[in-house]
Amino acid sequence: MAPIAYNRGMHIFIKIREFRNTAISALLFILFQSFPAFAQTNPANEPKVAVILNSGDASVSLIDMPTRTVIKTVPVGKEPHHLMMTPDQKTLLIANAVGNDIVLMNPTSGEITGRIPDIIDPYQIGYSPNRKWFIANGNRLDRVDIYAADGANLKLSKTIKLEKTPSHIAFTSDSKIAFITLQDSSELAAIDLEAQTLLWKIPTGKVPAGLWMTPGDQYLLVGITGEDNVQVFDWKNRKEVKRIQTGKGAHNFRPLGDKKHVFLSNRIASTISLINMQTLEKVGDITGLPAGPDDMEITPDGKTLWVTLRFSKKVAVIDIPSMKVLTIIPVGRSPHGVFFYPRAAWE
Image 1: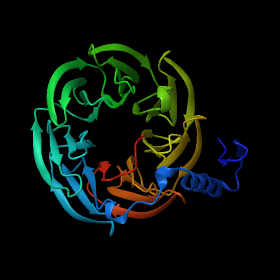
Image 2: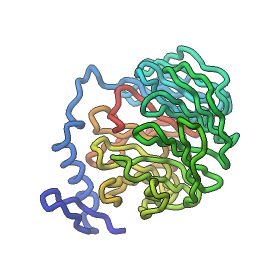
Image 3: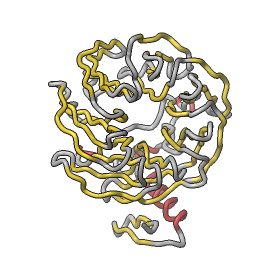
């Protein structure tokens, strides 16, 4: 697919080849000028500490964000892969897939404040939008555990066996359905959260991973890690709409924050694609990355993208308007999840 530039006044896409980087930068410049989410933040409220999960080292790297240096490495438990905040935005949850527990951490200081035991094989985790349910995908044990949630107080409600290799999670905005990618059976599953039963499974491309729901719950985007594309599903009718060619190892998503665009990491191609969720087209790529871009996070001013480099033992810091790499920071083995607070909105 040829690179494209966005002509805001005409609302059309013009295909060009010679000015690819200029086109992408122009698109992002327009977004920063026109969308209030990218307003300047108060420096006093800017994030100070980035938390990086070293899944191969059973540890967390804490990075001082102003100097972009690792200030501390903290043991947390075996295979920490993913993390998320509690609904009250006060506690960071770090899921140890092989350690079978969840570590509680202060999101701004990196101090460990507690631990939730007996959460079995929590590879990927997520709260439903209404905060009533907490899901832990057992990637290793082929199970999905549904917990009744009151913040970090979790009570197991139902275990659903779901082969093979449950991976990432997405929800409908009304919290009625949870979607799960099944990596090793190349399927997409839907779970009724109230009945806590499997609704359906449909085939996908090879090794589906990341999931993202477009605004209005219109389409479900699936990163097809075993191929080089994002599969777009009309999930209500259980049918594929199209495939967006991105790069080899299409893996995980992070929305830009304007309700129109989402980033996708391409692990094998070592690129990050920018996708327009309205046109369902790729509009640009971030290149020049070390191997294995994976999870991503964006600073609250919307200007800087942080991405873990799974195969390189590094983290990259990227300037979003120019789509250029600013800094590469060495961390531990197989870095996966990345977090800092505050951060740009995920809506």
